[in-house]
Length: 107
Image (tube, rainbow, N blue to C red; front, side, top):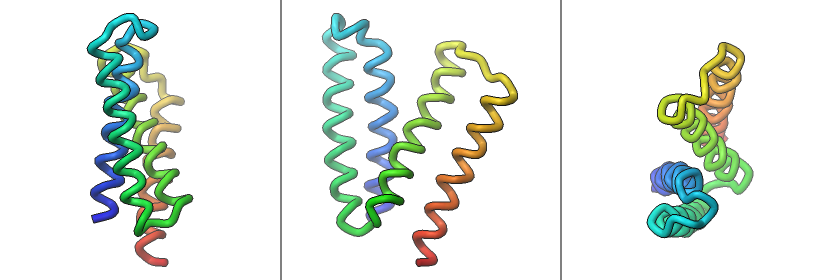
């Protein structure tokens, strides 16, 4: 269940980042409220995941999934570009996240 909490927390981290992108410097109330609510929900779920998961692995996966999610969202939705170097390093991040997940289960 801890990994489910962690994945949900990371997804909320992506929602928070999107809300921050769309809130125009806190001048748009709905995206601002979504960002705050998603951020609080993300931290709440991360705290629950940390009851069972090692701190370093959980935090790295949480931030990593958020980073990958927002990078892909930026490329797809906001046209931020997908040069080969960005895709390569994004793949490395995904490999690192997967590696941390599997090393946690083995340990």
